[in-house]
Image (cartoon, rainbow, N blue to C red; front, side, top):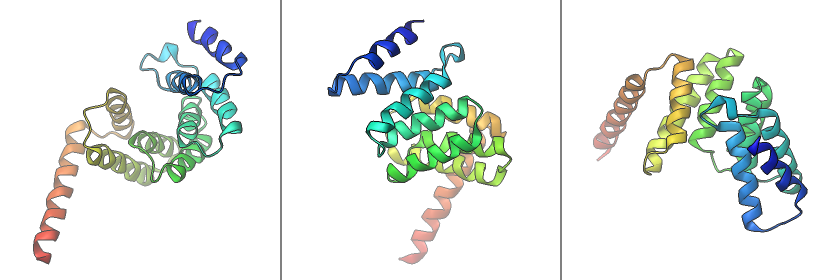
Length: 173
């Protein structure tokens, strides 16, 4: 109920400030990705994302929220379309884009594509070199569970790729 009231207040407000835009972005994200599924509202995340995209169609962030909203609503094709747009506009996308693309492709029956997106997400997360992100850890775990990938498996695959890449570089010198 609090999310609904907050969303209505933001929708009715005509403010264009940076703070207002950030609040709307946080609400879209929370409605689509809240770790407690009972607080998710995919339909409202989709609605707010589309509303934002009417004003800023080049926002990779809004396309990401729209894609995740579609995924949470069970619209695999809509999720893939929006998330691919997020990847295109976001200079290759985020690990979150990749994990949700993996899950949407898996749900659509494209297992090979799903595994490729999952591994791409793992690499993006590792390459970012940032402190651990709880949202990404949850998305990676959710995608891994759906695809039947265990955390250790993903780490082992990553380590093997690192060794292979290191071996390739050492032979070039």
